[in-house]
Length: 200
Image (tube, rainbow, N blue to C red; front, side):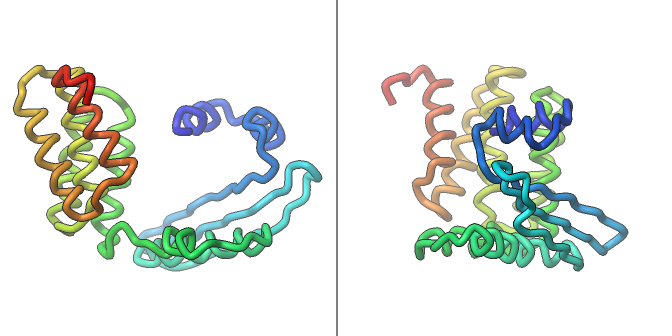
């Protein structure tokens, strides 16, 4: 969960402790180094039960290659674990949230600000999510980011109903692209809760 990731990022315990805490056998560790337009991604897979590294690889390229990296790493980890993926799982691995890597980078930066859970963070996240949508009008996650941060802003910073309307509008945009998913339902639930439609 995000809460665990934030905790481990701050406290940096040993890998064995993380595996024990989370009751997992395998850990995937990675790092990203960026120099101007070039990036190097290093990823490793370790079997914590035997303290044995099963697989490690480096990927060099530019941020434009990020989706290819994600797909390749996912498939290679599945192979290392000797997993047989279902067609639906294959589809998830190969799916790209956007074809515009600049929009994707803006979205990721927006997430960082969003997770600060502050007024300033929400406002910066909103600007970044909207910039992502301006680059790709079919980017559902960016619309969901706007919807989510608008609902949070309404809850924590301003009771102006325009924030909820903004949330609903962007949820509708995302829904038109990806339909009913766990993400769209979660935000729909948040909006209903803010409107005191508890049954819904």
